[in-house]
Image (cartoon, rainbow, N blue to C red; front, side):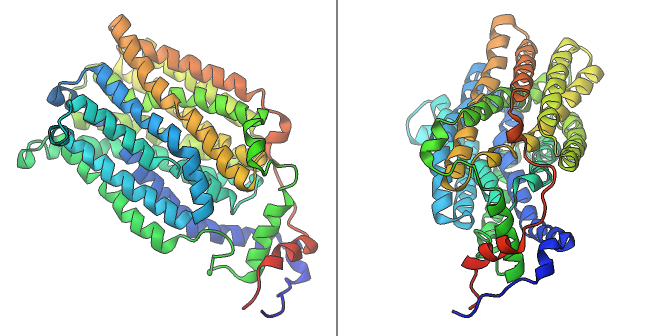
Length: 465
């Protein structure tokens, strides 16, 4: 082992060098993660489009669909924390690739619900529930794993813009996915004796298989294993992480009894209820206005999510510039709640319904990148792995509540839009909870570059071979 390389004394004062280093990291890892999340979300919510034709083909009721859609989140809930701990142990490259391959296989298998039910001598509905549950198990850990992975690279004050760059994949997937899903269902319906929704599930699983190979060959586990970084760049990145690690929870025991962690769980549980209700039922809500073509429904669902892309980016950029987190998350929650309620109130008017669904999507998605900067302000190390997994696992039970609220409301009242009112009030509750976030959890607007001493300390583990 050779002598340690010392960074130049001016390095700690060179803001330009720091910005260039982080830009280099972003350009290297963010496009891969963005494409992975686009594939993930395409596989997760295309069941909302499959529903348009699948229910009649399989003779499922809306209640069967809602229960099946929500079974995903029970598998997700049970295996998310273990999955994140395994990612922490075995590395992001291997574990994320494993997640993507297995969920692609199960997502595509939903297209063969009836043949698989006949093979295993069970009811079609039982097989549907089983496949959705397995899909949740397979995908468990991807999203919190990526959030944890970004915490390996970026300090809190740089995360909101990075998170928005990653989470922008969600509205892009929902925008393009709606158009693609509608087109596939229309174009391939009846081809080789299979329904359009079956071809949609099969074809939309292919990107996840491709990204499995990309992740395994192109992603690196952490700063130390990044051969594309210089020693000086590694020292800077590690020093900046060490600089803000003081006072964070680092042990597993600190996670489960941390009031701030449970506050984040409640916030995620309430705003995700609104989001998943919107994602799973928007095609049906639009169909209830009188639109019948799958392609036209896909094109109309693209409008709210397309606008939400711009809103998410602008809100995250302004939050990053000002350093303010709480209002940049609470205000979008209130806006999203108003949008959902008004979209239900004007459900008979297609134009106004789409307008307020756009407002709702913009509000909900704008708060997400801000929210996911918060766990990194209180958690570090293995505590971050378990804590982020726990927050996302419990918070994503909202996928069950979000999908079931609408189904129950329709069964009770005969109107699919009545459940949307409840989803809107969930977002109001989320906004109120966000306003109770302590100032210490909001992150810092600006941080000074690491000092020479901190750079040297961080470089202690980076030896030049």
